[in-house]
Length: 256
Ligand SMILES: C[S@@+](CC[C@H](N)C(=O)[O-])C[C@H]1O[C@@H](n2cnc3c(N)ncnc32)[C@H](O)[C@@H]1O
Image (tube, rainbow, N blue to C red; front, side):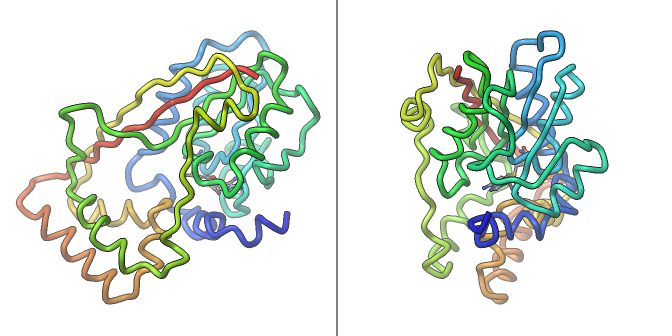
């Protein structure tokens, strides 16, 4: 549990927990797409959602008929989700508080690529899955060919990246296929998911960025640079009536 206390991501998600996914239903849209892409649950099927956040995946899974448990490393996220899903607890993805072979399905929406030790988490997930049980997780992915993000932020992120303090610029690469094979998962599949959401104006886009993991980027910029980013983001979209947020993910599935 000591690792949790020092994990920079956990601190970020503690900070954004209250506002997470409230500006626009970005994560819940991906959560619904993810669950809809899985085989329908067998009677009484047990599902564990790891890094559940505000419940984007867990609540969609419960609506589909799974018996859902959830964990998250952020105490604030767990406090928020507990109001709608009592079977949620604080736990590190690499130390799951469950017996071997407890779950038929384990899900993790936009979590695995953030973990300090994703291999340890995948090993632990495999342990709590029944033999042949299903793992499904999403990671950010590229838009389909010919599709544009719609909000012109990426150029600004690329430009401002160099202003981050050195400790924030190292993002460990995550190779899902290698990680799954390394832990002994089999029957790996990969599927493309994409969402398109309307934001009322550029300020809503800025607010959205402050309510999820991107907050780590902005909190690491000094105040002047943060203001410059904001002003250029908003000015660059001023000629548009509304802002379209278009983003994609890879949905990986694999069998234990
Ligand atoms: C991008 S959010 C995704 C939340 C949710 N799955 C969704 O799709 O909206 C990542 C979540 O992973 C959690 N997390 C990060 N590191 C973790 C760890 N080591 N163990 C458990 N949860 C972790 C964060 O607290 C956060 O709630």
